[in-house]
Image 1 (spheres, rainbow, N blue to C red):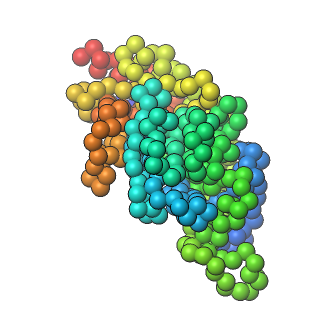
Image 2: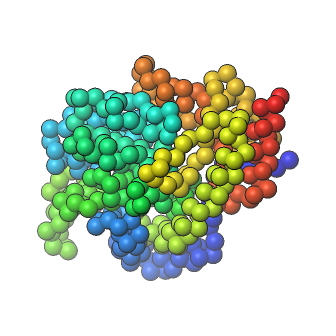
Image 3: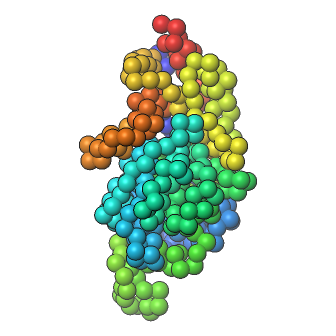
Length: 355
């Protein structure tokens, strides 16, 4: 029987040699690979500032602390419930009032009409790599953080994700489209936001301190990326376009064969997706049975549980997020999966339908 992982990493000799090279030069958070990679991300995403951090959750936390310093009136932030739990937990860590909101049944992303009138800030999530309709949210005039953990390589109105709102946060955790094991990135075009972010991720250091001084002028923590991770990631991003193209080919193969049996996430005309994940929508009655059937046939799948259904975040009256949480199954889609694997997964999904 086949064994197909839900995610897999394309780590080759180039990444290994880069890591060894960094080790030989001395491990730290201020190595040459950090500086070079930040510049490479600026060029890739078209942003003015790129700040590498230890993971996307620390990127979100740093961004929230930065907005709070710039906008001390911020008390309440809204977070979409159909998401991984990190944006909600990071928001709760920084702010007292976090409200979960519902999402669209079509692209599974948050909707402008669900933003309450008393919101002070917005956390948007590009679910599965599908960008939110950023311009519609920007019309509300509120500070916005884009949780773009899943959307590196996706585009919004022809531009790479990373410049659409005040701050964007990316992830390089092992399942992401490019990886260095862990790691994160903050992007912004605002000089002041960038200055504060850089200070917070390095213990609140003052930018005006002398090289030999320990001067801290704000609250901060150690959220820095190390040079070894940056060395690996520099090799990974060279292959980003190839990865995105391959995932789009796989997604089309899935959609062409499965759309007559299952609903799928729709990609709006204003954007392109990197297809971080590929989900099919069943219903509460059969989702677990289908997931177990696929597992029994060697196919690893994932099922997201919406944040409002988690014990720490219980909330009612989010019907679409509940519907998606009860019905979505995420199929394998990654850089190492073969066409034969994809066809096998399709066959098993269709076989289950006819059982």
